[in-house]
Image (cartoon, rainbow, N blue to C red; front, side):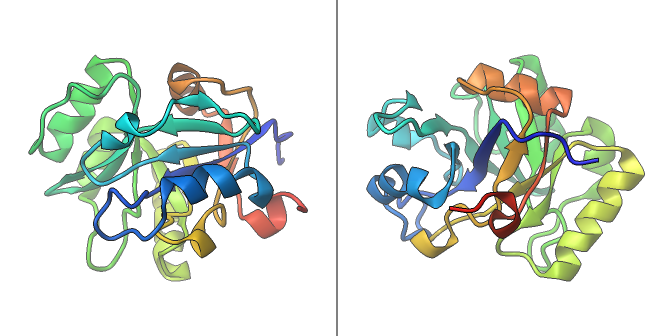
Amino acid sequence: MRQTCVMLIDLHVHSSISPCSHLSIRDIIGKGRAMGLDGVCITDHDTMDILAQITEGFQSDGLLVLVGQEYSTPQGDYLIFGDVEGLGPNMDGRELLSAVDGVGGAVIAAHPFRGWRPSDVSVLEYGRPAIEVENGRNSEAENAMALALARKLDLVTVSGSDAHTLSELGRFPTHFTTDVRSREGLVRALKAGQCEPARMEAARVI
């Protein structure tokens, strides 16, 4: 049964710091609330350099902005959150999941069945991260395979827009059934499974 939505957060957003993204931080912060979001997570590729340009937390319009990163490994890509600035580069999937767990953070397997960038399922079986079962840039078939694996392994499931343009922002947010006010709160909610996948057209009427 669908739980009551307390917050609607897009967990997978790339600013223009990611070379492949055309989405400015100004547009992310300026348009997020108008798109019906309560929060956004900036997850640039292998960097948290956006922290030099913004202040994390609630913005003047009430939008919660948090920073993680999309960490690339030979076994797939992972969204990582928490006290992860000090983690080094070039870890493999198992090393990354262990390192994030060691600093009390949370991990989401990003688009694990994307045709050209799949995840090694054995890493997911080993570390049991949350898993992105709705990704805005995946095909329906790729998302369906992620959902089937999540059910098989009993993993926490989330959505992510994987936004690289303004038109993609907020299309695949995640419902949170608890109040999230910080990175630490996000980590707690992900680990407790206090969330579920959503699509904006079904999530909230703007």
